[in-house]
Every structure is written in C-alpha cells, then in structure tokens.
Image 1 (tube, rainbow, N blue to C red):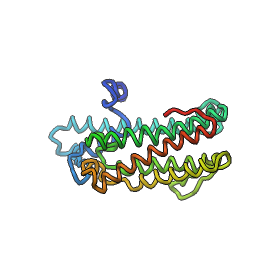
Image 2: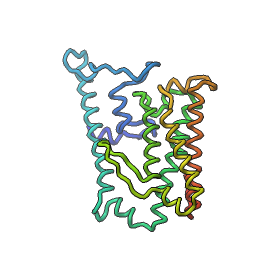
Image 3: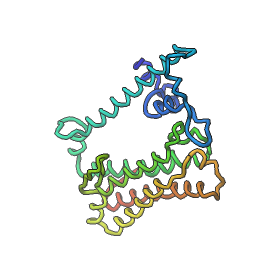
Image 4: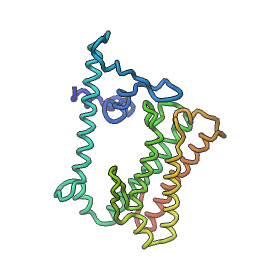
Length: 251
C-alpha cells in the first residue's frame, strides 16, 4: 500500500528506492540484461489471465499504479509551488528574497546540476566503474535523453527561453542578458560553455551502458570524456559568472 511504499523508500540507504521515476522505469522495463537495448519485461507480468502466480501479478499491478499516482502527486506539488498569485508558496518566497539571494539560488542550482550531478555523479562514476547499474536510466536505456534534456533545461535558464510542447515560445530576460550588461567577456565565455554542454548532451552515445564498456580510445569513450569536461567547464563558468556578479557560490 501507499504507506509501506513511502515508508520503505531509502530506509536502508540511497540505493534502496521504492518510489519515484526510476521505480516506475524498473516496473515497466525490468532489469536490463540485454547488451543491445533496454530491459525486456514481458507484458504478461501484468496480465492476470493465464498467470501461474496471479497474486504476484496483482501485487505488481498495484505497485505500478500506486507509484505512478505518487509521481503525479509529487509533480503537482512542484506545479503548485510555482503557481503565480499565491501568497505563501515557493514562488512567492523566491520573489520576495533580495535579488542577490534569488540570483544565487538560480546559479547554484544550475552549477550543481552541471558539475557535481551531470559531470560527476552521472558521468564520471559510470565512466570509471564501467558498471551498468551506475547508468542513470539503467532499465530503459534512456540515459542519452536524460542528458539531452537536462542540458537543454540549463540553456533555457541562461537564455530565458522555453519552447512548449505545442511549439509556442516563452521568452524573457535570461542570465546571459544580465551578464552582458555587467561583463560582456564573461557572458561570451558562459554562452560558449552552455553551447558546448548542450552539444555534448545531444551527442551522448547510445546505448550508454555499452559506451562505458568500450576501449578508452574508442569514439564512444572519447565522447563520454568530452561530455564530462564540457559539463565540468560549464559548472566552473557558472561559478566565475557568479563571482563577477558579486555572489558567493558553492557547488
């Protein structure tokens, strides 16, 4: 039930995950034993008719339903936290902070994603261990898209631009606009590093779990190394930009 699933999450450490996106990913794809693609969980794992163990099927179906419902609830909380015209949500508190504090939160979030998360946890760890379980989306083999859209998200923040699924463009002031007014040279440096990170995200080799196993001088391992450096350099560039803006940042 919901309470058990929530209560067990990370009870035995950060690798003991019982809810969230990657739990759903595992329930849909199953463990990946396939060198040429993702996990191959059969649909019969969720079909009661003809099942040799209907109790397990019922529990699996219930588990998937509950975890999806919880994910939707958690995403709805994020939407509500940023809803306009609310007096006490996160958006209101964020806009009420001194400008320097809000700006520091933006840059700290972007720098932490680019450096410790993308360059470090998601790439360097898998690159060095060569372990499939260190792949971000290790059941669906969707890791290349994770990198692509994470870097696109960073670019959106710096450009002040977002394209909706409908194709409509939202545009406003971005971090680079502020930097151009304060220090054009730093703005150009950061713009180049954002572009390099986005390019590395788009060129992430697939399937990722096979790329990490290749020889160090192979095209795929070289691409991974290049991405590690691009994300790290972006993080350093963000820190430098923060310094130019008079902010103290730690990633």
